[in-house]
Amino acid sequence: MTIREASESDVDGIHDVAQASWETDYPDILSRETVEEGVKEWYDTDNLREAVRDSRTRLFVADEDEGVVGFVHGILSNEDEGHILRLYVHPDHRKQGLGRQLFERVHTDLTDHGVDQLYAMVLADNDLGEAFYQSLGFEKTGESETTIGGNAYRESTFVLKPMT
Image 1 (spheres, rainbow, N blue to C red):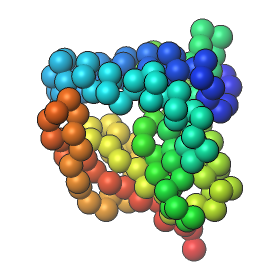
Image 2: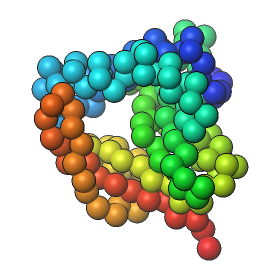
Image 3: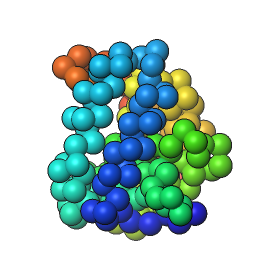
Image 4: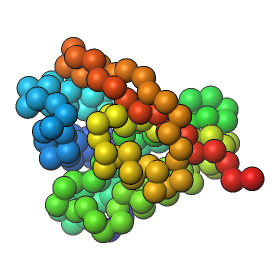
């Protein structure tokens, strides 16, 4: 297993991981139609290619022989803040520590770029996602609203502050 920076050739693999993850993780949260619309909107191949080229984006993939099996999408927000926008591992490759490895890779990268406060967002009804970020030391700081497929959903915000 290799964790590496994403390239434009990884875009289809990232899309496929997102599709499989949303279908597995969100059937009790989002309708099938909303999953399809959300994946199409958030993981559009043109948008992903643009993200790969954007110097403020930190996009890493977990790569095995068969291709991309996980990814993390971080962004440099300003000189000392970063955000993890998305982190998914294909359902067939979970429970192997890949999510933690992807997090550690983006965390190290963002820290190397001067970030000392890291934020993450996850749908508020995604108990597994919330538990994952809490297991990494993130603290829930509140909720906001996000739009998927034209519908509003609650989203939890987490922060990982520097160790003092």
